[in-house]
Picture (cartoon, rainbow, N blue to C red):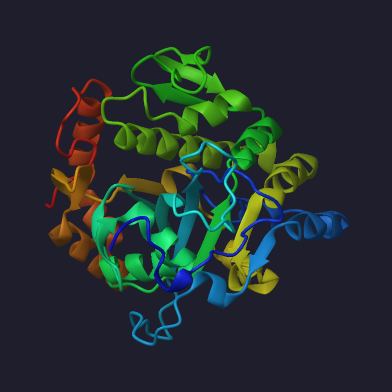
Length: 373
């Protein structure tokens, strides 16, 4: 099926009150913040409730597939799988409006977050947007095209089929959230392996090598840039993962954690840009989850890129072929609660790929991903 055809005349519904650019890097801010908010006294409860209420909620049929053959999840399984979603702006370079009928809409970023039943870690698995996968009812295509064929439900169905794991919740965050979030916490420090400039979109924004402080618009440019890297999306994913860890560490720091006003600024700055399914908006569930995760530290945030096995050119498109053996192992580890063991088996390869990626030449088949152990 052509990428320019939307089956059954599907027209995606609006995901925001007004058209916005939706962020590629999306750690659900509510999950970070709820952990912190638990320590705030009742005086601030109403303020935080109001701030949290600014997020937008979607109905289940707007985010989940309606087919009955979704992966089975035992009712007693307390683990949680969350799809963190960003979407690319249109090819016309206009502001993204997911309610639009144009077929150039794509899901730009997919991060599958797994929170195990013991709540001792948060695993963030980035899926490369050019992964060549089977989109149910459509056929083979890049995974970032799934939304144009059936909106968020089609993307959820595609990822569930890939990992054979049920997705419990979906969250979307506008890019602007990251600009405002870093302002609220006073910026973060990241380590840049190689100097680069965001030359294609903003020639005057450059980042030197080494430890750098990013905040506001510079933070936004840091997480968005991909054209400056030979490895394109792979290096951008790594930058995003590093940024999320830095934000998580800063939010859990005494500087922020001990200040109710600072915490409120964090929540209030982010929630207007957050869209979730109605289950993830449930206050009782969020508080319960937060209480179970009070011992989390920044070192408990584990991130890696879902492995690919190499690049190919198909139909004139450069695509990444998923490493299905590795993906099967990831899905099985999610089900068994053993992602820690899986990550231990690949983290050395991840570190090696990260070093290679910072100076890799263009055309490397699968640099930036771990191979099947």
